[in-house]
Image (cartoon, rainbow over all chains, first blue to last red; front, side, top):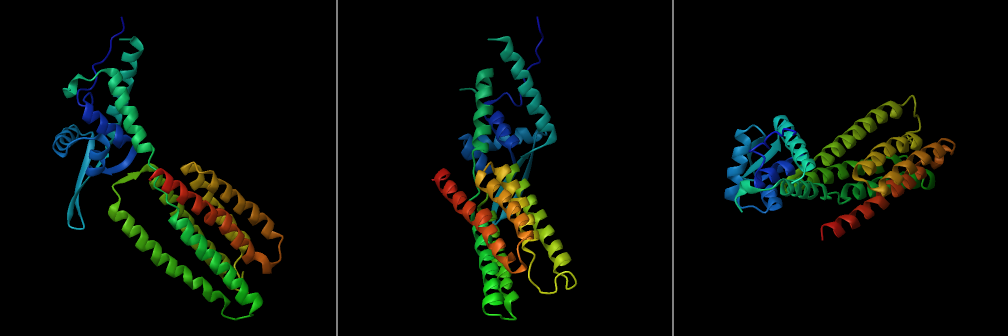
Amino acid sequence: MLMFKDLDPILHSQLRLAVVSLLISVKKAEFTFIREKTNSTAGNLSVQINKLKEAGYIDVTKQFKDNYPQTICNITPKGIVAFEEYVKNLQSYLHQGP
Amino acid sequence: MPEDSITQQESLAIIESMINKAKNRFSENGFLYLLWGWVILFCSLGQYALLFVFHSPWHWTVWLSTWLALIVQFIYIYRKRRVKRVTTYTEEILRYVWIAFVILLFLMGFIFGSKQSNPNGVINGSMLLAIYGMPTFLSGIILRFRGLVAGGISCWVLSLVAIYAPAQYQLLFVAAGVVIAWIIPGYLLRARYKQENA
């Protein structure tokens, strides 16, 4: 029987996976854009973004635009590798069948 | 649903849906194509009229209006950046394509605009059209927008034809080029933008 690697627990979570999948497709995105596209609450998204940041998967830049705080996120090279690995493992699970 | 109980199928569905949400954004509204299309059309026809109809020595002054267009462009970009919440790779690549175009345009302007190679002060339409074709064609490919691809190719065809045309008609070739390459695709882009962002 083939052995499968465990799916990365950081990415194998609904909201964190959604955030990383969104960020892999764009160069950078603002917090409010991510919140809107993932249909999440600001509190939950903030917690998950912090977890991704601690894992080194995304970079978070805080700045001021017209006196309003703005949080900009972008995926890191480590995040891209982790995402690719996750998708590869996911494929091997799916090929194995349920 | 507890967040860690997702199945592999659900994971795949999340990835697919998020990538599609990012991919389907179409943010090109055609404004800059229309701005520059109309300005260059005005300048080329204006210079043609002043030079060959009114025989004015001030024929080149119409091109000063490009500075006004540049100011409008800066204000437009500044305002757009203020409300911008996401930057796609497509936008990033397009930005550099147009920056390369502007640098090339200025360099060619200096090279061919020098008194030695251009004593009459009338632009070389053929050269201008050859340069216009590059960013127009590439933008069409990157945005998957046929109107711009056709516009870019048209510029190159017109550029070839203009080589054999008398110097007097160079400005008219430029005018035709911007109508086909920027003004028509600009309106098509605007229509598509309005439709997709309605």
